[in-house]
Length: 466
Image 1: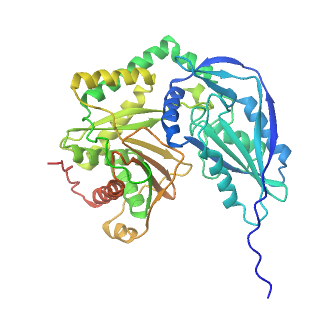
Image 2: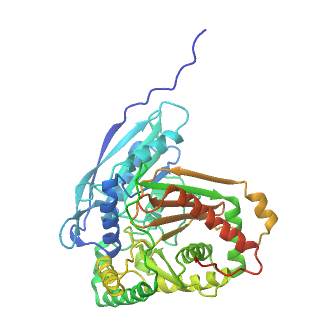
Image 3: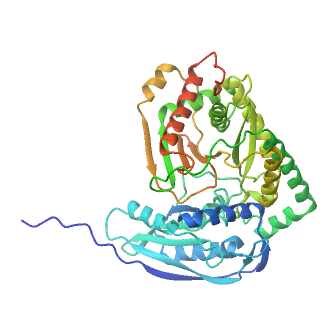
């Protein structure tokens, strides 16, 4: 009897060198957002995390290897940030290069299924931390079958882009070689060239930029003077890997968030932020609760299509005193608008301000939880629900520990991906500060609070810690 053939051995990848040449060279300052992401990248590197943003683009049928690599070459020539490297000066800057080469790995999969190996290639691109001073902030690979490329895999350093910066990149690649992505959000004019990093840095250094920075710092000072001191301390015994990432998906959570958004008339983002603040207020027993929100900072026309990070965390503080959950959602929505309106500021100036307020108050203020709400192309359904529907949905829940290329300097960092199919949570914890059991209870408590609020017509007051 002839044995069944085993899986085909992987075909070793080959490398294609893609040369590029463009204008707009020379040194340039780092934008405030780039300064923030550089500090985060430096903090993540010793832990082996790349802080890479990854995208896997399915290619249109018939696209050749030459066409795909030509699109990559034009992408490098089009956007200065993709052919820039960080200069370790004081303060750090960046050098934009006129020409260079990008090495693209070409993988040929000798098997019918290609999605799994393509995902593996993408993960491998992001696995190694970027050396932002010595390599381009983008890595590329093609994955195909029988010599025909089927996917373009790209990994980007967060110093070069944020998620919104990849909207014009995606639109450009769709125009040239990729299939349209039915999930990713698009913006009006996506695919346009947008402002370059040097132009945004110049705007931040202008008189108007200085006024904006002072406004942001004034807002941050108000929050820093009100927010509770950190309630966590380092020094917990290590148990395995220091940083852990817990993912949770729950049909009941989807229903509860949508119902509370419908009832309050506020966004799902405000509902989730209010829940985070309510849990922290219950932990600390303090009147005010604070959270860092990630502001995309793309309201100005010149930033809409800019391929450079424009996002930064902004401090949001809400008063939980005598608030029902519906009222807390409204207060959180208003506080969020104030935080976004205050906008970003130079990270070094914010760090100095925080240190000064800490000395004045005699407390530690690091350890603010972060909520990164990331809406996708389709919106979360917003409608009322009831206890019976929530009870039936409760069984449809998945919770798992996973790995991640992302690593943030926050006591706990909650990422939320939301679209028409529901809400997916990813909670990062540092096990020197929080235990894995705490993370599991935290996400369960978050869901329980929202489900209770969605079905409690009396909207019970927030209970404080004793």
